[in-house]
Length: 184
Image (tube, rainbow, N blue to C red):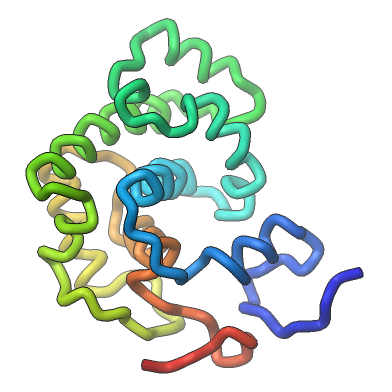
């Protein structure tokens, strides 16, 4: 039996995975490099699709991507790319798969340069949660997106980065009607 809590309008009330994600993960600060990495890869697969589609395949992505082990993913070659392209349980977009490997290498370099990926993100903002709703981009997502693209990442446009910042808890965007809504 589903509860009767009012949630954000995008959250499909018939999908238990989505409810769990909405209630316990989305907009909740999690700044470990492993989480920041997994979410960046997953968000890059969202481009042109719904987050629900990606979320429903998350466990399959974890399995296919060796638990999002950045060392392994950074070294994927042609055989692994073919394997991923033939995996019906994930999103099989060749450009996104190749980008995920390239983005992994760049994520790793950034993490080494800044001692963590979160330290890199902190170079763009003051570390305080941003409370805003009804947006798909902002100056922060524009700036991070531009820098990541300059470094060679793909599928990291401002809208994807904005979603990413919401997912990892830098931007808090629960809608006013949602039981989790709060202001700074």
